Length: 161
Image (cartoon, rainbow, N blue to C red; front, side):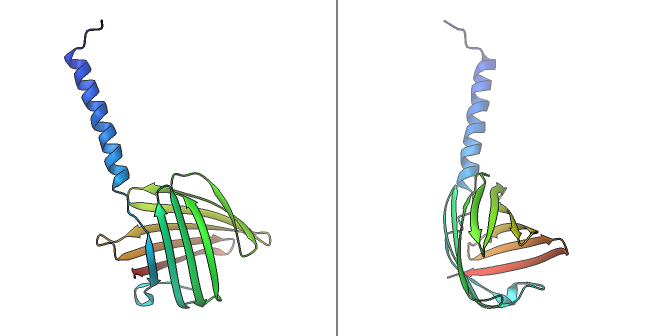
């Protein structure tokens, strides 16, 4: 039988503490689920056409994140559904005739989504940083689009319905 020393007890306690910290960290991630409507007064869209309305319906159960977006006006009327894995695994989907390759992963309380699309020989890179306000009533999507012509930055702020 193996002799267990105080050093071993300390090591086991340290491992248990680390495991508990990881479990607590995973449990403290924001839940983006809900119906969100854009608040144009608090958004800063820059050169992006301002929509008449924009609603996001989000179903979020880590690692699954499904965003259904309904937009009227701005760059046209459309309904799009995007499915992501928040664990960093790559997903591929079709959007507006282009293949989009995306990954998403947590950076603290921020969900970072990186997407790349090729449209008619032009590559677009999208980086979204999704955050939730402390009271859970405001969703912020800080978007950076990189094109061969340069970068576009926009901040979308949504109110929970």
